[in-house]
Image (cartoon, rainbow, N blue to C red; front, side, top):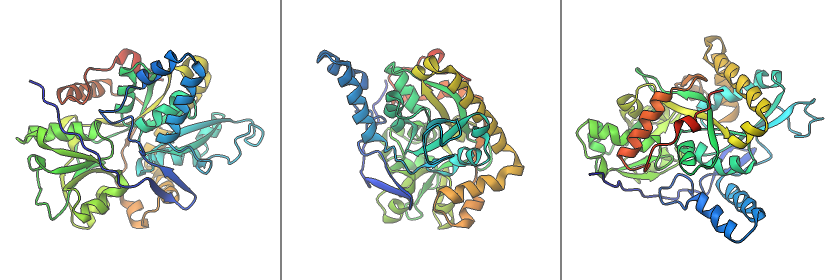
Length: 377
């Protein structure tokens, strides 16, 4: 019989400084990724019963403002959003995580790939793709890059979100770009030992805890007893050092940072469950694909070229410079972090397998409609 797995949350900080130019709001409400969140569709229906479409739009705008701060000081091809100041380019807003994987997007912008497609891209920092979805639905952003579970849940509520392409994937073997790292003091060295311990993930009810539970079970542990808490990736090192958590699922550059200080890499959960699994997808709204197919096609073409550019070893120095320009990291870390397998083509089979695991562990109550959700461009 299916078991419900524990879900707890800790609030570590309201704000995270990424660089002196901006502050971004991170998961202030933890709304979209929480299994206990209210249904956005039900919220819409409540407003509808009060009789005004304007109220529904207002509700979405307020929610988007809580979940993601859309600042005016973000990475962009131009600082002035007006078409004239951008030389006739179309302004596009893209939400992305402030992590090393975003180097491809930053680098593609710097290389002029989006400008060649007639686009002036502004990158809006966000904690995850799920947190950006309310802003995406409301039209405050045009595209977002994040884990698959945001669009999974949006599809289950029929919110009109589609995955138009891949962005980055894990590695089927060798060093991966996400992993569970345990405090050296915890004594944890293998997945089964995570049972009964406190493990941080950046978003509850997403690919991190789903694949960790699968890895624990595969190693003979009881996945039902893992105590997951939500900790933003940049906060994980301090929380491990303070003993507030036993282990953390993190991406680069934090894997490298933690291992260098003596913490223990326990498992790369994607490799243990679905080798080569997609880590980040590119999403938009079906509203935009219907109303402005040209913009979606132009952005998709630029993304495809950008990810091809990012895979070219000749451009690695430019990728790492993009990390240095956008993240406050020691130069040695920026030069050595493991970058993901960039690519635009989606692995639908892997995403469906991930959804199946999520059902098994009751993170999702049913599978998304993949025919509707996946709209590869």
